[in-house]
Amino acid sequence: MNATEPTRLAAAPLRGARLDLEPLRPDHAAELADALADPALHAFVGGAPLTEPELRARHARMLAGSPDPAVSWCNWVLRLRGSGEAVGTVQATVGPEGAEIAWVVGTPWQGRGLAREAAVALSDWLRSRGVPALVAHVHPDHHASAAVAAAAGLAPTEVLQDGERRWQWAR
Image 1 (cartoon, rainbow, N blue to C red):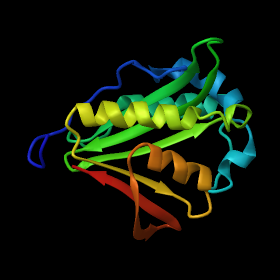
Image 2: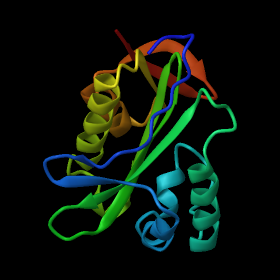
Image 3: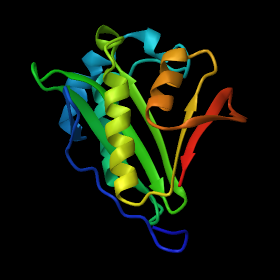
Image 4: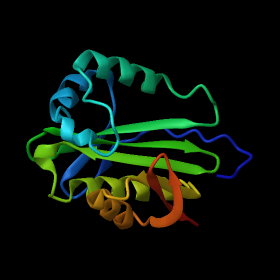
């Protein structure tokens, strides 16, 4: 992958030790509306939990893809292998220069290393596809997300954007 060729990746099923990362579908909206319903999830990023219809519409837009043919939107639902519960999401916006990644795990499942497991699986998958750089933005006070970014191989930079620190990895 280089800056002159369009990046065209599609989310593929991924596995962690305890999680299956399932490519996002519109029908995941009901499960995710429940799993991500806690307003506390928005303490650092703002906004409020989306309702099932709002999530369904958002998923449809995401699955339609980026209007830029050089950019891929890849999104996964995190599913606990033992119970089959949807517990969160990970995403990557992939372009010629690299990928911006993000993760969220519902409040009831936090503190178990699931975000770490998912972010590492996602980062490893992106690197295996030749993505040259990974970036995440983490609020300076969100220590759990900083730990997830570090586990995924990203390092903090001095760059702040909209109150969040840029973390990055590059070949």
